[in-house]
Image (cartoon, rainbow, N blue to C red; front, side):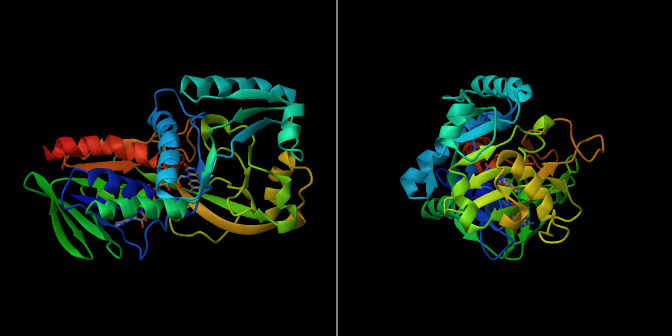
Length: 366
Ligand SMILES: Cc1cc2nc3c(=O)[nH]c(=O)nc-3n(C[C@H](O)[C@H](O)[C@H](O)COP(=O)(O)OP(=O)(O)OC[C@H]3O[C@@H](n4cnc5c(N)ncnc54)[C@H](O)[C@@H]3O)c2cc1C
């Protein structure tokens, strides 16, 4: 069988299916694994508080949170269960914190607790807020290490992990599919499309055009080292309406720096990480709402990532409610499974998502 794309999702799928399938090939276009969104993110192991009850995002985030910690402990991937706070800036926002707590509890997130200004101050003395929701199961992981570790386990189980292998054609071949890449042609009994930002284009190779990805850039800034002590763990504002983005937040990274971001902006290109960055002034404005001691002079532009957001079917640029992860069999070649719109919390959810897809692959190979 073939997996297209060697980001965190493709590597986790390769790991899961190579436990029972033979001749597993993971084909990655780039010279290394995980060079897309999987290494251009916040590295947060999310808890699952934000997503609609019963959605794939909610289920796989909550289960993925547990699995990611378990995997990191077993395989020596750097991580830390830091916990996080979602902060209400004013008393007017407090009902939204309560709603978030209820949503999280409905999704099965445990340990959530509303804390008042005093407790917030004891935890994060420099953060400004009236109250906060404490989320103990959130944490951080070195995302590049996680990708490599999933791929390592896959390879130990016999999977063939190939880079420099862009897939350019996907056609029916008997009951299976013919996959053409820079490495040649493979006849496969099952194929999983894990091409991230390009998953819609890979789907188009079979004529499946139902979904389109709207690339959505997230830029980050980093605080100068002298200011990184201002935050101890993860500090978030309330999310934007419809969970379009979690809002510009503050992350004390595993390597001790303080990240501010990411922003969220629809862009035309899936490969342009540099041009037209959000100005530092805007980051400073967002960050100061949570951290009044930070100034524009304290911030430097850092990296950016591009989210694989599903474009709304009605053609609008911005959905009212963030869409769920899509996992669908190809209507023309049913042994091909497409994973589309795997935006946040995809890093957290990867192994759990891989288990769902592995179940479908098992059915296909019967
Ligand atoms: C700014 C930002 C912040 C985020 N923060 C978090 C967070 O804190 N926590 C969290 O859980 N999630 C977070 N996410 C989401 C998370 O990073 C993604 O959901 C996850 O990395 C998606 O993994 P993937 O494997 O689907 O995609 P990718 O990592 O993009 O991998 C897809 C791979 O497919 C390859 N590919 C594409 N086309 C082809 C082809 N034709 N042939 C062969 N290979 C191909 C690409 O080169 C790429 O390596 C964030 C995302 C962004 C952008």
